[in-house]
Amino acid sequence: MTSLRVAVAGKGGAGKTTLSSTLARTFARQGRQVIVVDGDSNPNVATALGIDREHAEAIQPLPMGLVSRRLNAASPGETRAALKDPVMDVVSRYGGLAPDGVHVLKMAMPEHADEGCLCSAHATVSALLADIEELDNTVSILDLEASPEHLSRGTTRHVDALLLVVEPYYRSFETARRMAALAGELPIGRVGVVANKLRSPEDAQAIAEYCERHGLNLEAEVPWSTEVLDADRAEIPVLDYDPSGPVVAAISKLAEKLGALKG
Ligand SMILES: Nc1ncnc2c1ncn2[C@@H]1O[C@H](COP(=O)(O)OP(=O)(O)OP(=O)(O)O)[C@@H](O)[C@H]1O
Ligand SMILES: [Mg+2]
Figure 1 (tube, rainbow, N blue to C red):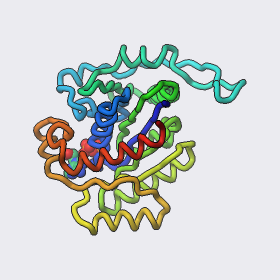
Figure 2 (cartoon, protein in one colour; figure 1 turned 135 degrees about the vertical axis):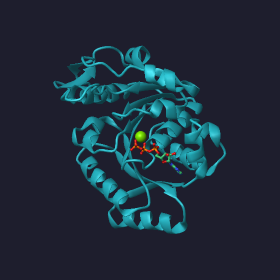
Figure 3 (tube, rainbow, N blue to C red; figure 1 turned 180 degrees about the vertical axis):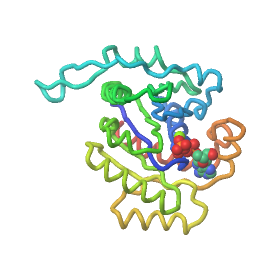
């Protein structure tokens, strides 16, 4: 078995964190080691996974200075950015532990206004994902913020799949199309759209037609569900709040599809 690395992107509020956290725990329940990386400067995937607020806030962002260069096994003579320490040492040192044994890391973010460049933080996530490839039976999920920055900086170059979460309205479609174009310049094996918050067959059809017109691969359809909002308000993951509901069912189906990409 090899590792599967998935990045989740899309417009603000589209459902990236809900999808990332539910996918993560679904994979963990299937017996995979799961590492979630919160790549949002306003981190909230830890609470979405079910860690209480106090413990979620206690997770320290990854520090700068974890990366060095090492010989690249895949292309002899070249070097690549890699973590200085074994990846699971980094995960256990800095990560939090969520229900179902999911590990969660926070990308380093500026703590103060005017703090400047994030290059090193992006390089850390990129090296982390590159090293995770070598772990067995592992799934890594990178929950992104609503900006194309992780794509334009190439932070996501080491993922096997990029999911673009789309709501059924035009500006959301357009964001996904632009992100797919950026992703096309990176060596990402699979780029797919996840249609979320579908309230009607017309919503589903609009997204399907848009995907078809722009050559995008429609990976999954997730219905709109008031239980997701109720779960949010109760600060309970939807996987615990409504485990047999349609949203969890659709995300489980997607997990099966993704799981088949890499044993
Ligand atoms: N299928 C769904 N049905 C109903 N509400 C949903 C669904 N998916 C997500 N939501 C709601 O949409 C809101 C945004 O979800 P979420 O935080 O997962 O989005 P996001 O893309 O991560 O947002 P951000 O860009 O702020 O990181 C939340 O209130 C969530 O409960
Ligand atoms: Mg989010």
